[in-house]
Length: 268
Image 1: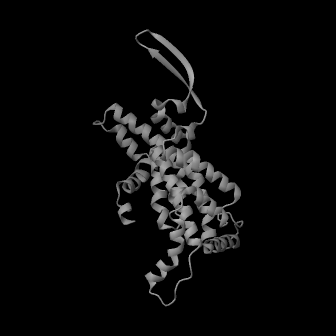
Image 2 (image 1 turned 180 degrees about the vertical axis):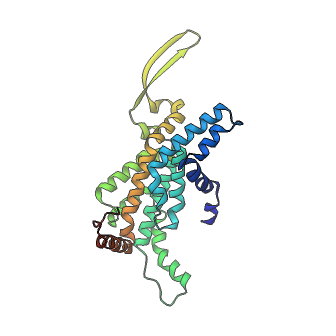
Image 3 (image 1 turned 90 degrees about the vertical axis):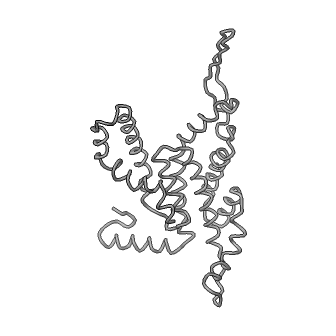
């Protein structure tokens, strides 16, 4: 975890969020500096505008952890990719975040009772051995089904996750244009420079490999933020089922807020 905190990505978060995205000081410095040309200044202004817009959509997810060190690096890095507009990377990281969480949830929900006589590390390893062997090597299809069977997700969530598996996980990791776009078409113009013939037609995206790069990017741009926020919400809703003490702590916090004059469940 410390190596990640020292990475260039986290250093970006340390300076860019307070200096570039939460106040105008750096922007004024760039715009007024005589050594920066007009193109550089324009590029900075456009970057900061888009980055602020992207940050606004994931700021809560970025600033609030899960309480699971196993997942925090994926969460933070996915948020930084969204802020920077690295859409394809954000989708791929969200795919991993979803699958990692479901596997960990199944493992931690099915640990064996520790051997009281064993040493601390041995107790931990022994209690995790069977569920790790059973769940950590599952493919995503079986993992989703197992999570439903274990009561960690409901029927509708299972259906949604299988849709995610097909649309994002399989489609992106296998560069499957059929899975991504189905029967969607796009207008295409073909030209023969020898005969000077020109043809216009609507073509199925999946049928033109030349469109793969742009199609992947546009698909990711359209889906990266809603996909990540839905997966993030699922994780936060499911955690109390994996670790029941979290629900108890939340109930206690809501009760305290209620006694202080705020309605239960509202954090004000």
